Image 1 (tube, helix red, strand yellow):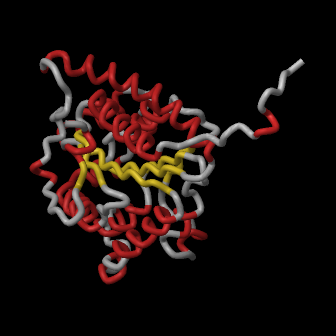
Image 2 (cartoon, one colour):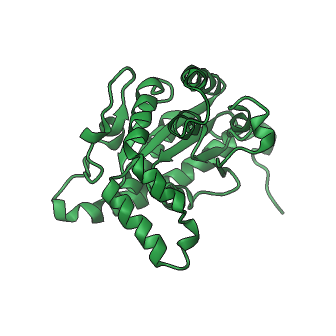
Length: 274
């Protein structure tokens, strides 16, 4: 089976993250001992295919692709961007990050800052965190009343349907890591002075409310995985598996779009350059 079929959250299904093993590596063929080498080989093939598909998407200039990355701290959002999307042509591939809203952004509806950075025709845009923070962190940290964030699931679904009907294909990825793996990655940041800047004492506080975040993610996955823009839960303890699974899903989505560059204009046929 391919990772798209394995990890998709089917619309209307129930999700229990505790039943999904973040260390599992399903979908690879061959002996267990050879899985990493096989995944890395297939990932390299996916990258080359995606580079060509991106070029065709850019030339076609009719549709776009939005990839949403969500996950607990240290789940691998930055690593995914480097390893899966880094090799693409930056002219047609952008990354948008979402941190604490500015005062201007707070003066608008919660989707205002999101809509203006969605991909234009021909582009691939990756969201490093996203509009889903407004039903994740906002909910868990009690930043607004429940009566407000409960409405946002429908707002998000309507927003994504608008994008989809306008030609934007959407892939939503939850990077699913274990609490033990997060502990190791956080400690590695602290132990490396060149990466310590990525560590925050707030990360330790977030670990204390892991179950609350897990429940919030489960509700997102259940309420916002649709036929047009499904969620995928990718086991992310093993980075090599994460890279292969996501590059495969992206490749399959682009292949299903089958972008077609414009045909050569008749006036150019037979032209010779002196």
